[in-house]
Length: 214
Image (cartoon, rainbow, N blue to C red; front, side, top):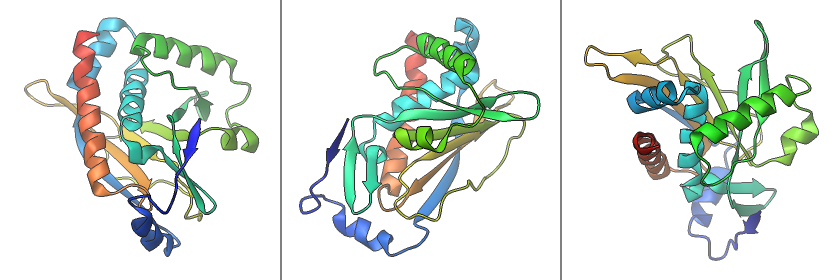
């Protein structure tokens, strides 16, 4: 579900208009994220670290209103929530893309089980254009072989594109056992500012911390 925003009362209408002048209003940020507890949780509960991180990411994304704005032509909407559309290993050479409805309040273990079931039912590695357009997604991927410093992601030359793109690399462990990875978020500046990335970062830390009690 989504709610149409009244531009006359929208508090960032002027900011949207400013960045709408640009053909490419997108920007990205990479930072080091402490995932120590996420690794512990995945090992303790017997699920993949990737599934754990997608759950963490979606909980944080849906907790920040700016990440749920969507542009459609001249209109802007507030989505009830976004759903993950993520890459996974289709075979030794190719990746697949799988979309999954987000369920508020679902625990990570149940979420991981739904991921496995959805991947098993996926008829082809790449969804049709119609299926890709149907959802209100967050595009998620990982590069688990490389501890990168920054990455530039692909995007269409359409300045109304509202889909956040999120990626992370291989985690590294320091001498004290702390595990960190590079976490990258690409967004449209028409909708998302630096303060919203800060709130996302806080949401990620909060979701990872919450795993201790699950």
